[in-house]
Length: 136
Image 1 (cartoon, rainbow, N blue to C red):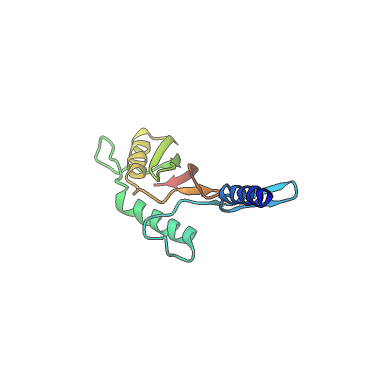
Image 2 (cartoon, rainbow, N blue to C red; image 1 turned 30 degrees about the vertical axis):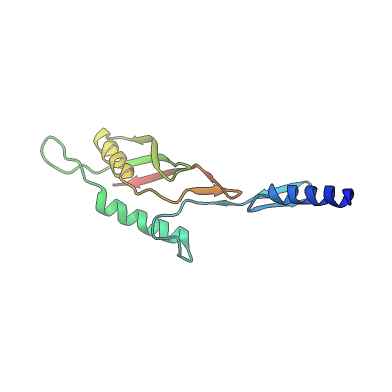
């Protein structure tokens, strides 16, 4: 009876510490990583396409072209490095481009992105980094 109890406790311990989306085969451990999900794309079959579509729509609606001293709109390129945190918030880490006004407008537009379902690694929330080149 004692042996049965010890075996039952060990088995329940192993099952209790199992991780989601982790596969172990011999000496190889594979952990599944999932990308952040844009609000409203949770039930979509193709979450990546839904994310891209919503991101483009967000850029169209929220990017405000800056003006120069003459009142003319300024166009340019900006490369935005950002991170979607474990809580789903967007944090801009770096903006690079030739024009500071375009960079500031691009950063403001990215900071207006909605809170998302965070990315996951092995079933646990994880920060995911993105670098996005934009021609505005």
